[in-house]
Amino acid sequence: DAGVIQSPRHEVTEMGQEVTLRCKPISGHNSLFWYRQTMMRGLELLIYFNNNVPIDDSGMPEDRFSAKMPNASFSTLKIQPSEPRDSAVYFCASILGTGGYNEQFFGPGTRLTVL
Amino acid sequence: GDSVTQMEGPVTLSEEAFLTINCTYTATGYPSLFWYVQYPGEGLQLLLKATKADDKGSNKGFEATYRKETTSFHLEKGSVQVSDSAVYFCALIGMDSSYKLIFGSGTRLLVRP
Image 1: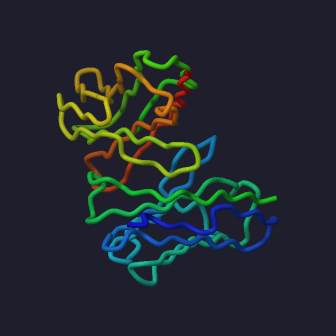
Image 2: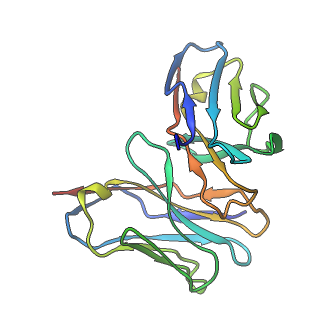
């Protein structure tokens, strides 16, 4: 199994540009999470999908952030326009089922730098 | 709201030393508790978990016991190896959510040969 796949692994962009992060969950998993990791705030849940439907987006910081899951094998997190304070590592994770009691399988992350 | 507090790092140990990383939590009722580990350049991996009081989670020589009376879930290992160098995160899922992991700030462990 390839595990959770994220792309790109590193992204450097300038303030004001649109950024799109991509995630392919483990095949058969039906729940997907997007997290952000920063030194100041640690690991934060941004949004949770179950069966491709957004269930909890209360962690999305503001309207500049949006996430989609058009099918069971693909999700995107978009930031438009990007700002320097968005610089962080963004992780995608997936599980089989709905409960977090099962192991969440994390991707390797995308390190975003906004200049 | 629910929260997790971990000891500040980095923790630096020599190989074969005993490890303890402290973790305490604040939550109503009986949350489920987890330890995740992050190796350099990788995503987090579940290390162990415990879902009710007095349960002991264990994996790869690591152990943690769910202590309701002290609201703690300290991580221990009897003899660390260089390959254990990583960042360790304590986390919980509260009773009001079936999926939302609340993470501590993480503790970096460095094991020297």
